[in-house]
Image (cartoon, rainbow, N blue to C red; front, side, top):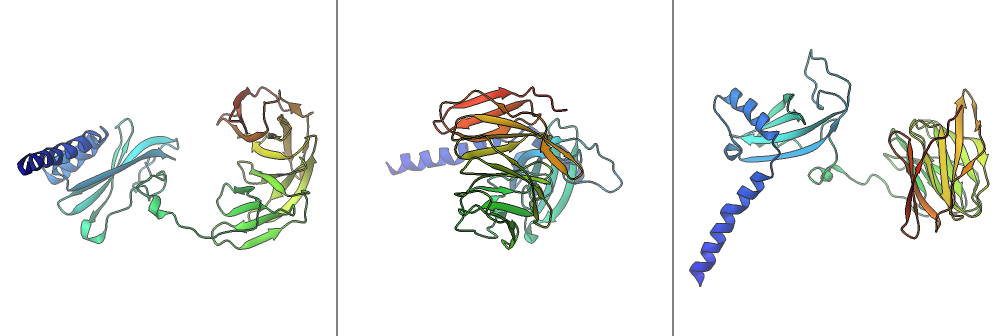
Length: 311
């Protein structure tokens, strides 16, 4: 019986590494080929002491590792980052998804510690690098309505008293507090993609549009009404020209928002889309702004084609 158990354990020990190696993306072969040329021998994944990778989309063709004197196309570029440990050195490689671009970003002695996968500019947060995240502040006594500015510098939250509070997102310090503007509490908050406009909504259904500054200041611009009951969801279109709202009355509403110097206002009648079967809890636009997705408290969802032309 003991011999049978030992044989079984040995089989598992041999098969498992092979299964893991089979999961390596094909792009690793491009990194291995380049490394092989540098060290003067043909390499396979079996020659590596360790390897890991993360996959994502980089802001340009440099794959997050621009080289001195090189020019790169400023287009979103899918790619992979590989950390290959070979003979005591960790090689950080970047390979484009089409395998046409291979960049050796760095070579670091393993004794100095390996680079963290995804830690460089442009790489996504993954399970492998999630340890980089750490709590920088905590907040209490608020309603749960919150939004982070696109630049990541400020966080906006609502209070049960109807105030809008702006915090430094990196330190947790309170930067500003408005007077109570939403009776019975703030129920929804949303930034536009530029970070210069902020919309807040309350349990009474009223929406307030604010000018937002990078130092945490807020200045009221417009008040939008018409909803019966609380507004739970707000969303700006990607181009910032439309504001969508939904809530307790089960209706999705659209407003056109125009910014011309210091003028922000409503420039068309609100559009009330057909009601859902339950209160609207979430709204989001597609990347191109052509579709609006709404989700209700009963688990139902709807997709709307956005064809409104804003002049």
